[in-house]
Length: 333
Image (cartoon, rainbow, N blue to C red; front, side):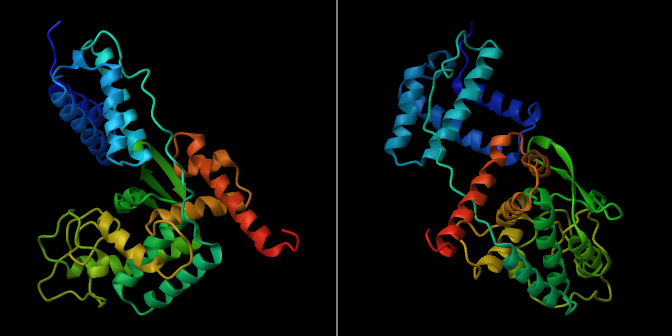
């Protein structure tokens, strides 16, 4: 058997996970970073081919990461990355045994996600609705974004990937392409439907008409950097050619960073700990569904989780909230 160089094998494996396994760009990038670090570490140990990878080397690699102060979650992810890689090496015949099968890693510490209380969400959306009533296309768009993030519990990547054709306005559903290129149909309620209708009939056409003729589907600058002014078409402006549901002032598809900055600005004054990003609305929606009596497996399907264990984190959130309420309200807590 001809020895296969580690770096060449990594390139082939990354092509495999992107094309055949359908991994997202972010997941593939994380794998690439982890395995590039493994390749560099192996070279320092004098190992350049995959047949030199063994359990001791892999354990030393994780140990070095621990000594460098990497988080437990990062080390756990690295272990998962290399186990997938060595399993693929065995399946393709590049190695005769899989050195990663016995590799263990620390369990990643699972922190409870940030959840915004339902009254606070209502207050936030009411404030956005007042701004939208001014007719500002950006304010109308931001209201539609937050309503849909919360109503459909979308990931931010799912939200910015939506096209106009993804929305069934009659049935009040949205077709979402989630992790692993898995498609699901998610319902949304009347407030989100009203906000989307207002955006699609007034704000989106105004943003496209005011956009430069060369607008494309590339992500524009973040929405928080955009001037709060009504977009009016100039004498020679014409609609930009884009299928994107949410667009910016340049008529191009709104990017992840733009949504992150918009949400962070909105959440900075609200109580709660944890990241103030778009996922806070997804976490909040899932927790509020369970608080309202929704079945765990139905919530799993709604969120697009592959594992029920991932969804169960929200049962812990609900339990923690109950404990906090008990401690603050019960006279003998």
